[in-house]
Length: 173
Image (cartoon, rainbow, N blue to C red; front, side, top):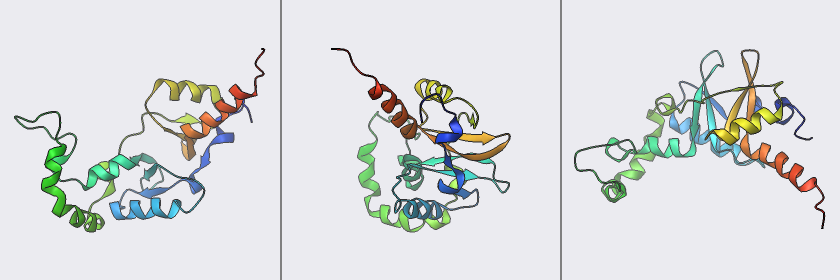
């Protein structure tokens, strides 16, 4: 393949990308990621879909860890006198960390979903994906065919194609 191809040629089909429904718990999400780690792929996020398989958002690895934190340690926690480094407060949570992991089956994943800022169409050129990835902070782009979610384009896969293209050129000495 080359960068003259389309997004559909490079996307990971939805069936092969970890995803859960909106009623899934954090334990379900961890289980889905753990199951997918047995493959050659290492996924860094799980898609969250509604009951009609429409994309709600995603849970990245940091989102999952953040969801286990108590409110006073979340990165968004602000209180009077708070300094920039809240990590010292983590020692307060040390004894309860294991308990938080054991209660993950009670925490709904949908409350910690990160919205995916934009999607890309299956028939869009790969160069459009290069532009989107280069100008945004996302690592994945949902791929749609009409209004239906069919898969995900990952930055790492696109970068492999760009790398091949860059290295295929002979350098004049």
